[in-house]
Amino acid sequence: MSPEEHKAIEKEFSKEHQEVLRSLRGTRVLLPVLIGLGVVGWLFWRRFDPDEFRQIEWSGQVLFWVGVAVVLLVLRHLAYATRLRILSQGAFSWRKCIELIFIWEFSSAVSPTSLGGSAVAFFVLAQERLPVARTATIVLYTIVLDTFFFVSTLPLLYALFGTHMIRPDMHTLAQMDAWGYYFVFAYLLMATYGFAFFYGLFISPVQMKRILVGATRIPFLRRFRANAVELGNDLIMASDELRRQPRTIHLVAFLSTMVAWSFRFLLLNCLILAFVPDIPRDFWSQFELYARLETMFVIIAFSPTPGGAGFVEVLFGGFLSDYVRTSTVATVISTLWRLLTYYSYLIAGVIIIPNWLQRILLERRQRRRKKRLSQKQPDQ
Image 1 (cartoon, rainbow, N blue to C red):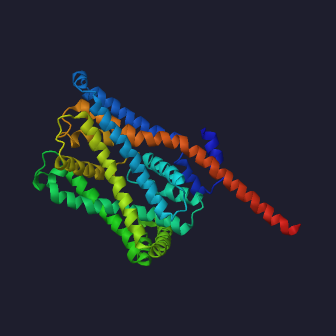
Image 2 (image 1 turned 30 degrees about the horizontal axis):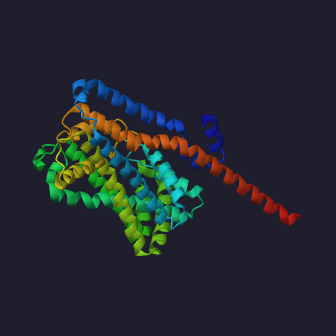
Image 3 (image 1 turned 180 degrees about the vertical axis):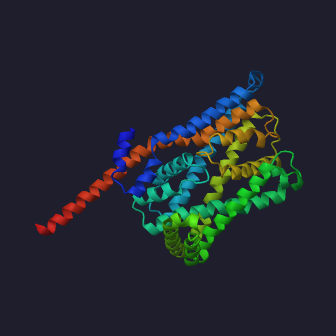
C-alpha cells in the first residue's frame, strides 16, 4: 500500500485513530530496519572472523535445532492467539486471532520496546467490533499477565542460580556492574506498573482512577489528565468485565502466557545449541541459560529503539559470552535470532496490515450505507 493510499484510509477515521494508524504505516519499518541492519553491519565489520566462520559445522545438528527454533516460534504465536481467543470469549475465530497477533507484534516491533503496542491493540480490537469493556479487558489484562510472568519467575530463577543469571562471571552482589543495576531498576519498574494495573483490575479500580487523575495535578503531568481519566475508565470497565468471568479463564490465560514467553527464550536456547556444539546440554545447564535469557529480556524491555533494534544485537554478545565464546558465532546467532523473531513480524505486518485495513474500511462503508438506507425507509 502506497503512502497516499494509507493517508486516504486515515481520513476515514477520527483524529485520535489517525495517530494510531500512522504507527501502522509500512514506512514505519524503515527506521528499525536501518538501525538493526546498521548495527549488524558494524558488528560484522568489527567482530567477524572468516576463520571462525569456517569452523562452524553446518551439519544436520544445525538444521535440526534451527528447525526446532522455527517450531517454537510458531507455537509461541499460537499461544498468544490462544490467549486472545480465550479473553475475547470466542468472539474471534482462530484465524482472526492469529491475524490480530501478527498486527499486535508488528506494532510492538516498530515502537520503542518500553511503549509496546497497547494503543494499537485498543484500536485494532475496537475496529473488530468488540465491546468496549472487553477490549479494555484484553489489553489491560494482557499487561498484567505478561508482567506477572516476569515478576513471579525471576525471583525463583534467582533463588536457583543466584547473581550468575544476571551477567557472566558475576558470583556475588558485590560484583554488580552497570547492567546489573539496570536490570534491578527495570525489574522494579516492571513490578511497579504491573502491580498498579493489578490493583486497578482486581482490587479497587475507582481508587486507582483517583490516583491516576490525582497525579496529573503535578504541573508537568497536567497535559496527561485526559489520558489518565480515559485509562481510569478503562480500568473500571475491565474490572467489572473480569469479575464476571469464570476462574478457569484466568488459569488458561496465564498458562498460554507462560508458554508464549517460555518458548520465546527456549527458541534462543535452540539456536545456541545449533551453533555451539560444545555447550553443556544437560537440563540444569540449559535451564541456567534460560534464566540468563529471561534476565536479558528485562533489560531489552526498556530499550529506547523500535523493537530494541540495534540495542539487542549489541547486548547479545556481552551477556552470553560465557556460552557463546567467539564473537563471530555470537553475531551469526543474534542475526538469525532477530530474523526469526523480529524481522519476520515486520515483513508479515507489511503484508497483512494493508489487507486488514482495506477490509475494515469496506465494512465501515457498508455499515454507513445500511444506516443511510434504514433512515430513508421510514420516509418512504
